[in-house]
Length: 190
Image (tube, rainbow, N blue to C red; front, side, top):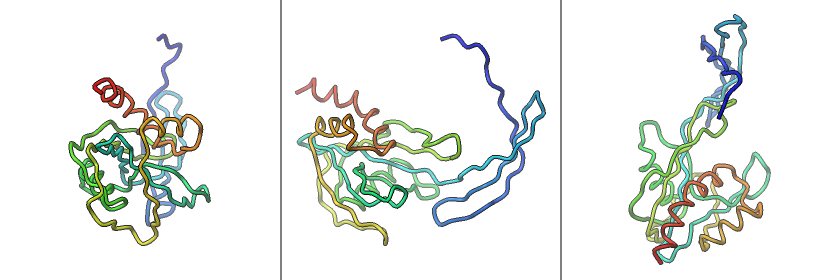
């Protein structure tokens, strides 16, 4: 890969709150270009980190949830997930969110990877966790505004849904992308 011009790292200055909400803060953050001296204020959404869980059942099905999403005013097929509590380990958060949203509990929980949901305007990360041998053994424990349909589907069907546009949540697509090599290993072993 060849690059014609490397961009400059802007120097971060002060910040101030524009709005504080229950789920994130909107901040005005000052940045200064190191050579041009240009100073600008940019809006940054300061949010806690999130976790999304790829939960694989013993018979090679993935656990999915379908829920109403206020931002798109539509239903969305997703893997289980949610906000990581302050100081909580991402893997522990994934195991917790899986149990709370679906009642599924599994083994061998591990991190598949982490992504920046939208680095243009957001400062948080989404951690993608794999849980294997997931079985429904617990009671669901939804947040007050949650109402979730839980289903399982064969892994290859989930990938077909993703390719066809039936799954549209970008972070779910990230999770499926990061799980793909593990799924290829599992299929090769059977």
